[in-house]
Amino acid sequence: MKFYVVEEDRTAGFTGNLTVRFPWGFPGVTACETCGAAGGWAGLQYPCVDLSEFPERTALENPGRQVSFEEFRRLRDLVSPFAPPGARLEPGADFGPPTGTGTGTFGDFFLQNPWSLYIRREALERLQGEGLRGLSGCPVNVKFRGKSPPYLLAMQLKFQGRLRGEHVSAQENAPCPKCGSSRHTMPQLPSFDVRTMSDAPDLFRLSDWPTLIMASQRMVTVVRQLAMTGVRFVEPTT
Ligand SMILES: [Zn+2]
Image 1 (cartoon, rainbow, N blue to C red):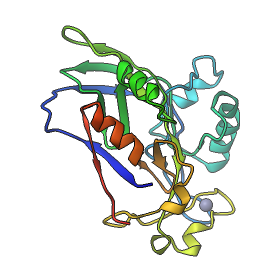
Image 2 (image 1 turned 45 degrees about the vertical axis):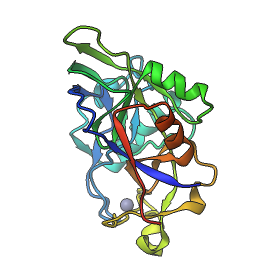
Image 3 (image 1 turned 90 degrees about the vertical axis):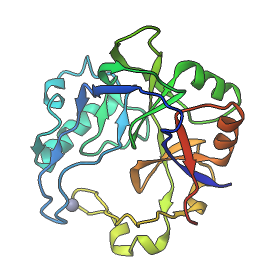
Image 4 (image 1 turned 180 degrees about the horizontal axis):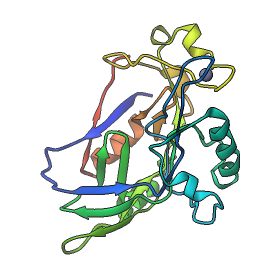
């Protein structure tokens, strides 16, 4: 099984644009005393997690701020019951329906940025009807200008797969005993350890690098057969 990186395809001439943000998000953390890691991740997105009933949600409404690791851990433990099993609840994770405004025309897929993938509801249903696994999304909270606005879903993807061993030293692979973070250097041309993807869903984020969205060969084949628009699939080096 081959895997591909999902990228925006600008050649189809769609003009769509979203100006949106997640209603809730974990703050970043101040530098860890043990390993020095600070800030938060991009790409940990949970649009289907509704925190409108979360008692301390105001602590999640200014995700740009930084808190101590202890305060982050406290918030994480409180949010955990609202999140799906196995969710990566780490600094910088975002929750809830992307909210804001939209303009222009949209293909079947839309990438707001390389790590934020949207899909039209009817496209998702067609792909699921073809038996593709791991595709899920939730409605956005977007006011569209113009006629016939699209019914867009923000995708909530699972995590799978590692970078190839030579890009990840044993030291980097070992999570920090205090904060659990592990850091990798992104190679110029990413390559992946396909052995870590044997039971991957058809669309997922790379565990080692959550801003990278990847598709299986099966997904690429179906999307091309159905002539779906908005993204292209780039074969990484292996
Ligand atoms: Zn640490």
